[in-house]
Image 1 (cartoon, each protein chain N blue to C red):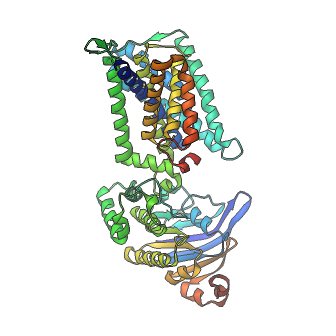
Image 2 (tube, each protein chain N blue to C red):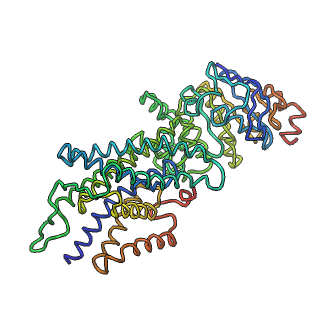
Length: 302
Length: 236
C-alpha cells in the first residue's frame, strides 16, 4: 500500500514538472507552428540565471519569479530575432516547414556551449529552499517532502493562473484566436505578430520554472550537459504530443499520465525501462489516438 | 466618406489577378461586385482589407489609404472584412467569436452595447452564445461572421460570398439581413457575390468584373435590365 502511494506521489510530482515543459512546447507550437527543441536550452539558461539570483538574493522564492521573467524575455527575443525572420524567409519549398525547427536544434547546441563558456562545464549546486526529507505517515516515510509539496503547489498555481489567462481574459482570447485562425484574428484587429511573441514569452517563463523546480526537486546539481534537462525536454515533448499538442489541459493530462506510468515502471519493474516505456507509450497513443488525448484531427494537420 | 478605387493592379506572383480596376462607392450604399470564378473578386476585397499587396493604383476610404498598413490597422479605421467561407473561429464559442471583433475597442461599455445590438439582429446567435462555433449551421455561421464584423463598429463592410454553400432560403434571409444592416446602421458595403441575381436585387450599385477588369458598372437596377449582363451572369 505504502509503495502504491509512493508511486502515485512520485508520478504526480514528476508529471507536474513535465507539465510545465509540455505547456511551453504547446504554447510555442500553437503560436508559431514550431516544435521548439531549444526549450531545454532556454530552461537550462534560466536555471543558471536562477542559480546566480539565489546566490545574490539568498532566497529561492525571489529568484524563481525573476528567472521566469528573464526566461520570458529571452524567449521573446529569440522569437523576434530568429523565428520571425526564418518563417518569413521560408514560406515556400519542400523544407519550408522544418527550417525553424532545425534552427531550434542548432540553438539548443549554441545555448549549451554558451553556458559552458560562461559558467564552466562543472556542476553547479542550487540549495533547495526546504527540507527534502519525506513526511512521516505512521512509521513509514512517504515519497513526499515539504520541497516536493511546494513544487507541486507552485506548478498547480501556475497551471491555474495560465488557465485563467487563457479562458477568461482578452489576452487569452487573442492568443487562442491567433493560434486557431491567424487570418480571422487579424481581420478582427488583433496584432497577431505581437501575440505570437507573447506566446513565446509565456512559454519561456514556463520553461524557466520547469528547469529551476526540477533542479531543486532533484539533486540540485546542474551542468551544461545535464542529462536531467535532456530528459525534461524528451518527456515534456512526449507529454505534449500524447496530450494533443494543441491543448493546455491536454498537455497537463499527458504529463501526469506519463509521470504515473514511468513511476509505476520505476517502482514495480525497473528504472532501466523508463525510456523504453516512455517511447512505447508515445507510439501507442499515436497509433490508437493520433490526435492525442485532447485534440482535434484538424489541429494536427495544421 | 466614400470608397474610391483607382486603377488598381494586383499580381499573384507572375499572374495578374486585377488589372486596372476603378470604381467608387458612396457612403451608406451597398455595391455588389459580381463576375465569374477567377474574375478577381476575392483578390479585390483582400487587397482592400490589407491581406494582399497591390502592385499599382490607389484605394482610399475617406482619407485612409487602404493600400498602406496591415489588416489589423484597417479595422481600427472602420474597415471590416468578412472573408470567404464562413469566417468564424470554429474552436471558440459564439460569444468569444463576437467578443473577438471588439477586442481592439477601448470603450468596453460601447462594445457591450454593440453586442446587444448584434444579438437583437441575430436572435439565433443569442440563443447559442456558449456553444462552440463549429456546432452552428452554415447560415448561422455566416450570421456569426457578419456579427463579428459588426462588433468592430465598421463604417465600411467588405463581404466575400456570404451565400457560399448555403440553401436558397437561407441565402434569401442572409441577403435581407445585409440590406437591413446597411439601412439601419448607415454602413457602406462592398458585397462580392457569385450569386449575381441575389446580390443585384439588394444592391444600389454594381461592378461586373471579368478576368481582372471592370466589364461594366452602374446602378444595380440598370444592370439587371442590361441584356448583355443578363445573358452572361444572370442566365436568362
